[in-house]
Length: 136
Image (cartoon, rainbow, N blue to C red):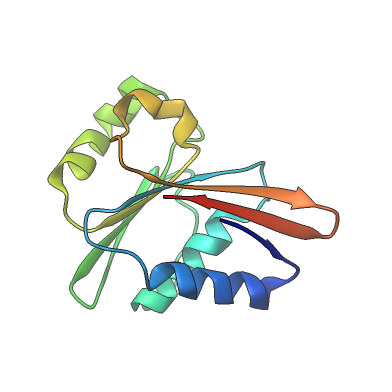
């Protein structure tokens, strides 16, 4: 599915629609250039699922975990790490647990650790808009 969004409100609406389709155990891979909107999309999804407080980029922390309505939400950023560093951070344990829902930015840096049935979201800048391609 490909969707063009022209502003933050449309991004939020898409994130809400997407959030309503998620199930425990889902792993969502977000790709796109710096500034494409990966973290913003994740923030909208997590807020819709019930996260209170600030949801920000885990670039320097690598992994941030939130809880909302009894659901564990993991936000992982592999921008600055490789496979062995991801293992040191406990990434493989988070994924193999099957608990919660996990969003991973820059997953291409740790592709060896990814499960087979991931949801892929690629965000590209198109003129003054963003194209979200969601593949299940």
